[in-house]
Length: 321
Ligand SMILES: [Zn+2]
Image (tube, rainbow, N blue to C red; front, side, top):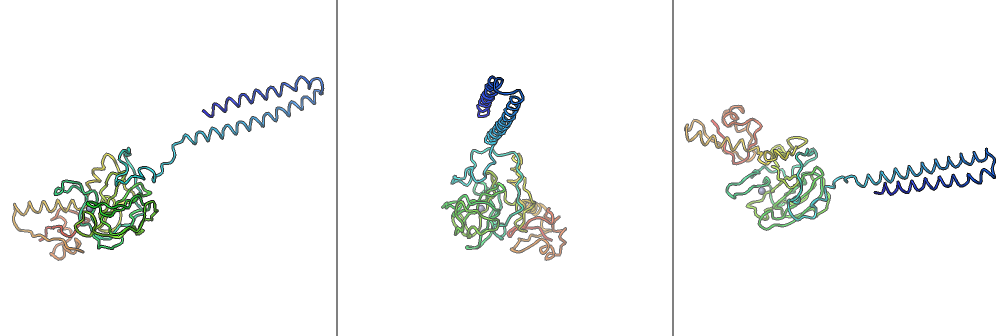
């Protein structure tokens, strides 16, 4: 609208200028020579040109400013649902179909192994929306990515003392069962910066970190992003896909172990005991287990139906010779 209003005043201005040019014309013919008149006329035309240029410039600027105001502002990631006290602050948000998330600048929150995977827990008839990582009370818990603290809260039956961070890459991470906060809401944190001390608060049966990764409130299996065993990310960019996020949700490196365990149980009940079992202990790796049982790594893997890159955790039961 501004543009049109301005156009109107511009037209009025032009009309006024035309009158200014016309007015001296009558007297100039009487009082000035033709050459003088001509010079005046040219000067007027020249000044008119400058004024028009000025008007055009101002008009262009105003119009540009107007356009600029109309432009959708760059979304501020620390705005949407920022005041929410819920772990999922995006309850009514429209989740994009796909989002490539830069996970290059990361830090594993604690170095402990996975004590409980992400996924549905039949015993409790509910989803476990994070992954549990072993720690001792008082161990340092670090920010997984760079970002800003959204919440530091306490929930008696659930998370206990917990921190929610929102990251520059669009993810949010949740850290539960803590014993002490080292940060406060609205504080900026770098990846790897200590944010809390680990604990056993809330609905926890032993010291561990409950760690969640969420995109717009949707819980993603942290193991789809992080390789906790090797303390790295699987890839530089994690692609969230709305159509397949269920896959990411259910992604579990220990799935193969579980499948192997199930097939082992089935084999044992039908075939008998040509193989025995080995329960994985803390610090074990596939190579060591294989050599301890006089097997090659390939043999051990094929017997259990997984690859040499399978993740094993203490308590997993493997088939051995
Ligand atoms: Zn948990």
